[in-house]
Image (cartoon, rainbow, N blue to C red; front, side):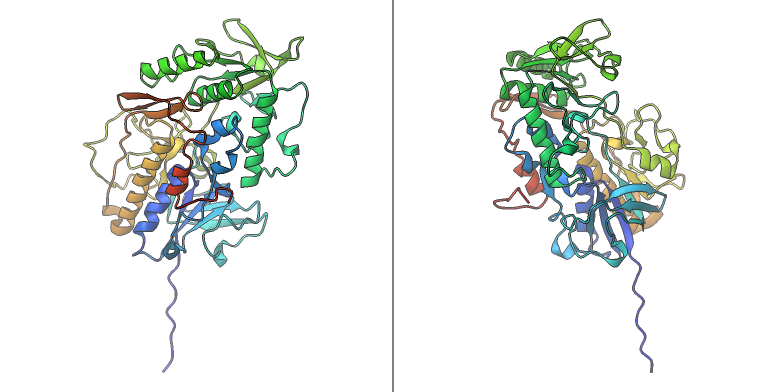
Length: 462
């Protein structure tokens, strides 16, 4: 009588591109609901070795002493019983409807939550194509240059580049000892420290853009360095125009209280950025379209973020991108589509939507800043909520197939918290606007470490 070994079931991958707020929320929810489906494996792919908590970057690029807290290991996302799921550090090169090709740029071990399976082993510089049953595209948008730790500080590359012109130094961050521009924690810390040092050295700076980033950098810089001359230039009549008028009023009052020179309704002439000139004091001169002239030692452009849509567009076709804004077209179920979607149409009673055969990519979802998600603001909490919808819908499809009733995404009301100096802030949630003075230097960053699985006294240097 012969002995026959059962052939192991093939692994079915759920690939999540992007390990930030939305991608990690989806990964955690999926892992918790896949206990009865051991044939499925989650693979989160991110170019960084640690989760980058972006909301502290503006503060930590100005105020020294906390920068190491911004980078959180991925090692606690999955529990010990979920060790088949993985988070890998790699660059996404391309994707098709059922696979993604990645490249390892460093042999990092800290980015893995368990043993590396044979089918995912990669040496430095290797590429690998990973098949998937489902995918969540959560690659977000490009970082504005004042907080873009992937771009050498002071390097002028594009019209909207972060420019920091210093009379006494022309050193770029890539020349700083110990800096590794490959998504490592040490390299990103070095970038933030270099940003702090350069801001400390200048006598004057211009912040272009009166959104949350520009306001937070201007107010923090003004409070940390009260001797500096700081100017804010904004192209519209109101700061933070999609929010309540009270948010604008409080932000403007706080900026002026900190002696920031606020200039509204002034749009920068980008030719003066592309072709910089300097005055007799060595300061860079910029002009606005109205003809006004400004000069400073440092110019920080807090504008110019663009959706990271290239991988999806090349893989699934350009029709998955809304040409009006560059965002990925999605249905209310957050499934990617290549047909025009009325993003202003209301969610049908907030209930489930039956999957129909005309959905072109029923197994691929897009969430976060890259998604054209029915007027949702671009924010971490928005991506978090969208990650929940995508994860729940994947579980429904796994359990019930094409007959599954899928959850529809309904954006919540605008919500934001803006720091206006180290302790002062304003936040809005729905119609409610609250002003406070009990902020802390590190912006309660430990709360995010706890959300990612860390408990007790945390060594944030890891």
